[in-house]
Amino acid sequence: MAFHLIDPDSWLRRPQFEHYFTEVPCTYSMTVNLDITLLLHKVKEQGLRLYPVLIYGIARAVNARKEFRMSTDGQGRVGWSDTADPSYTVFHEDDGSFSSIWTEYLPDFRTFYDLCTADMAEYGEIHLPDAKPADERKLFDISCIPWTSFTDFNLNLKNGYGHLPPIFTIGKIF
Image (cartoon, rainbow, N blue to C red; front, top):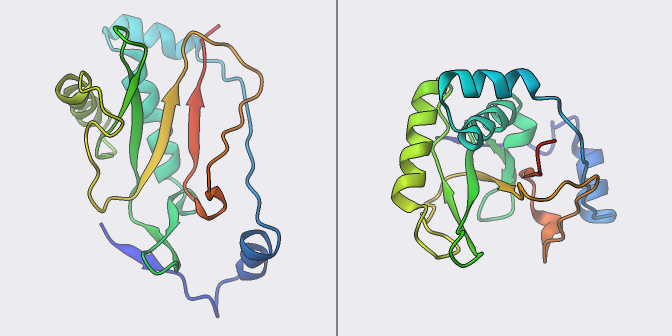
């Protein structure tokens, strides 16, 4: 997986990036309701688990746009990776905690679904924040709070102004 540095001298978005990254650092959040009625029918019809299906859908959308795969390298230079892999939370019902694991994004749904459910089976019961430690992969985050319906969600990261990958939070289905 290659990381492509952006040449700041020829980057058309440089003025906007510098304005919001260094002059007026900020973050933003957005909450949207999505109608997944047809998807729920297909998931039930095919005997699939919904969470891995949603993870795939989000990962597919992220990987469709290089702007969603942007980050910085170890020296703070901006670039984009060929792919971004989803890092997602797994809830532990026994103690109310959660762990983060990740799955390599592959565009073929069935291949990704099988890898994701295998990762959940292998790492899902490890009660550590990073149950499946990441290597040098470029990750983006997904979490799920399936028992809570919300109309707004704002995540505040310490030193988060330099965090470029998107973060997704899934709420209760209604």
